[in-house]
Length: 271
Image (cartoon, rainbow, N blue to C red; front, side):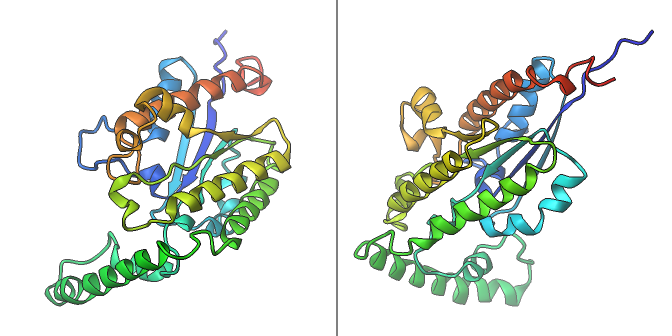
C-alpha cells in the first residue's frame, strides 16, 4: 500500500514592488524575495507547498478586485498574503500614469526614445517631483484622507469575496516608512503610511475573523535590524535580502502552525 502524502499548502502572494523587488537588485540567485524565502522554509521543514506570486510594480490596491476570480477560484489557495497600500502613500498629487511612464521597466533601446526619456521626460519628471516635495513639506501630508479609506475598503471587499472559496487564511501586511534616501523626495510619506497602517489594522479588526490577520513587519525590523529602516530597506523603499528572508521565515512558521490545525492538509485528510 502506498504511503499517503499530505496535500501541499497553496499560498497566493499579491502586491506591488515591495513583494517583487530586492534592495539592491542584481545580486546572486540566493537573494530571494520573501515569497521564495517562505517557500524554502516550508519545504525545509517538510511541509509541501505550492506558492504563486502575482505582483506588479506600482500596482494600486483597486486592481485586485478585477482579478480575484481568475487568481483564486481555480487555484483555491489555503493562504493569501496581501501587501498593498504602499503605492498610494508615495505621491501627494502626481498621477500614477506619469510615474509609470517616467519609470517604466519596459522602455525600448531606441535612439529617439532614449533622447526623449533623458532630455525631456526625466527632466520634467524630476522638476514635478521637486515641486511636489516642496508642497508636501508645507501642506498637511494626509490631506487626501480618502485614499487610506479606499484602500481598506477595496481590501475588505477582496477578503469578503475570497472567503467564499474555502475560508483561506489571509494576511494583510503592515507597511514600512521610507528610509532617509527618499524622505527628502517624499517628506509626507511617513505620516501617510502611519495613517494607512491604522486604516489597514482597523479593517482587519472590523472583519473580525481569526483567519484574517495583520502581519507586523516592524516587529521583525526591531528584532533583526535594530529598528533601523536603513538596514531593513537600504534603497529607501524595498526590503534587503536579509529582511526578505526574515519575513519569509516568520510567515512560514505561522502558516505551518495554522496548517497543523487544518485536517485537509494532513496525510489522512488528502484521501
